[in-house]
Length: 610
Ligand code: AGP
Image (cartoon, rainbow, N blue to C red; front, side, top):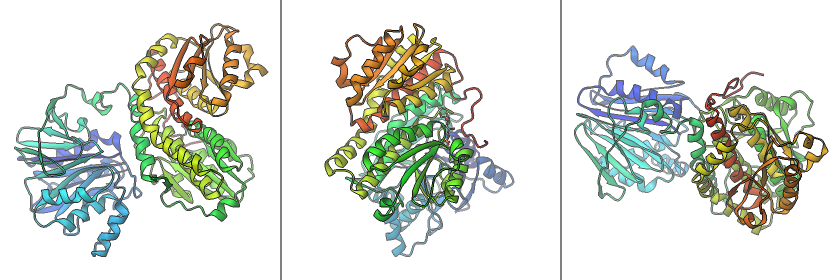
């Protein structure tokens, strides 16, 4: 996601507002930023790669950019590496129109081809520049009409801020799928991606609704729907403080990011699924390459490694080739058996984890092709991989990852299905069923999040426990690894994930009446086995919290002290749902323990050193 701001006023205060507004939105994206203002009937643009400070320093030395009208942007790259030329705003060919954008234009490649045939040239790799040139190609003097025509042609999500030299007193804004608010001032009005940007100026805001266009002057605001009909402006009074506003009034970034998962999962999955065909961006594994693969080696750290542990199970089931998962810090020092017939998949949110980057380089040295699954566009791991698939989770601020984990996992499902389809190791029926179920993940996660308060109640019962085990079998065991790490990271309670069938080989000696065992049982074929393991630990005094699917309700009798139900879905996809109550449980337990949830002790968001 990115941060957008816009200003129209009577007192030539555009630049100061744009800069302070962008400062408040840097949590939304910060790999580059820029502003465009109308000055002496010309659009002046200052935009640079790097943090906002870079353009603030440039603007600080200029005093000729006084303006009544302007737009600004702080970028979280999705299409096109962070660079000066890819930074927003983007200027149209005529120089008359400048645009800032938050979202993903899914049909930008086709639009770019059409515009190129009309003689348009593109300086950047972004989808946003396509919007600027599209507006340019449609513009015949009526900006509102031009915008309406453009919205008919654009597919995907877009919050837009637009200025035009023919409209020196008017700021235009468009909202579809990505958030955009209006700040209502005195002789000045504002637009922004989020409330923090305008709070220093006004607490009167209007949240643009889906498919609306706003036309703002310093004294007036009109809102239209995409078909041109006038819409009523609903103004609300914001009583948040600025700090709370950056978290969208959530207490922590972590819970905000947990709640963002349905949206970012949809952002990551839907552009890659057209009906039943999977389009993994520019990835092109030939049948010959895949048939010659001797194995896939997934290498990562922490939660990204846990994604690999889950992926191993379903990838091997679907593609019928060996899938190894390894900690990057081990892989890089053990002379791994990797060659040109090994596909190495590096998973990393930051794309800067030192061990994972070193493992990537080791794998390439050994001749392997490297595919990376990364959240930060243009990061080192992304740049050094042969192929990269981006998770579109947006900036993840909390140290404990949640939405990046979920979007990484969703991409691994798509990769596994894509490979199994090319190799012919999956029946059409199973393939279609899994695609249909993957499309249901966002709404099923929404259903789980709606019951977050019941998980909070359970957390309240157990937040003082000092000894916790997470147990499960196969895919459930792999999800338990992530549940255990989440809990350790932010609540500082020692916990351990254990294969349920392995407990009796020694570790069960630790189970006593002070132990909480969180058991995960989503895999139909192993449900009874896991129930037996629960009985084993219960008979030794453990307290049981069971996480299972709704269809098992009549099978568990009184075996658990507490139960969290998750929706039924294809067994292979259950991890995407099962991890959500584990994230929530860890969050609420840490909250009851008064921990510093977003910045846990001893931890960094990205471990760029060994
Ligand atoms: C997860 O909550 C932790 N923050 C940590 O384990 C993290 O997953 C690990 O350091 C890997 O980071 P990366 O995904 O940026 O490579």
